[in-house]
Figure 1 (cartoon, rainbow, N blue to C red):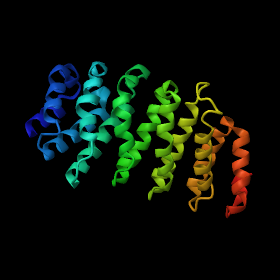
Figure 2 (cartoon, rainbow, N blue to C red):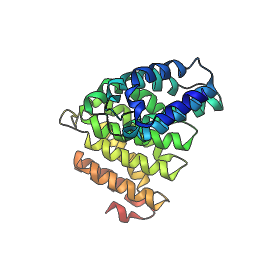
Figure 3 (tube, helix red, strand yellow):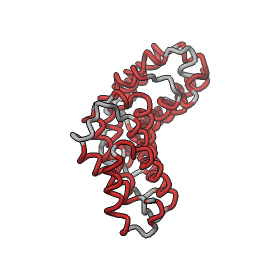
Length: 259
């Protein structure tokens, strides 16, 4: 394994010419049945490669052709929950690889739509991880997915996402909570005319109510993030939001944000 890592690291941009060899090796070595410590080390290596993708693994612009294998056969199987600290560490490194893959901006709408069906359930599950960094990356991953192809999601798919983000507004980490609020801004921007306001009124009501609770959050940065989210979402159903604000205004310690 060590020799393999050294060869890959030292290859620099040349590794981008050998993806037809590298990806099958990664697929074999990173199967969930393989030894956990080896998977952990190789995922760490892969994450570093993806963070400098254009100088390494994508130096020839060929990585796009292997994205489906990378996501479906390598990342997603390792994001599935198994008991134990090592298993949790592997999930974190798999999520960090996914974040690095999205961050290098080689995936477009078409590529993401191909894999999002299998990917989104695993990323949503990662929002519940014990590791703060995993929950934070999961929020950011959902944010990027929504920005790239969320306007292609039907209302039912969108309605499965927002409750999980609302839960993260109660997260133990303020950083995660702020990231969740920012991701909900992207969620609101995905709403098209297909999202029938009267049909889905109960969903919008639930979302407004959840956000308004945190508009009175003890942490000011979370308050401001939620305020920005509500501003973005206010045009969705203005009369309903006004009604919800009036219902809770007297309960807020500082009703200034309700104005």
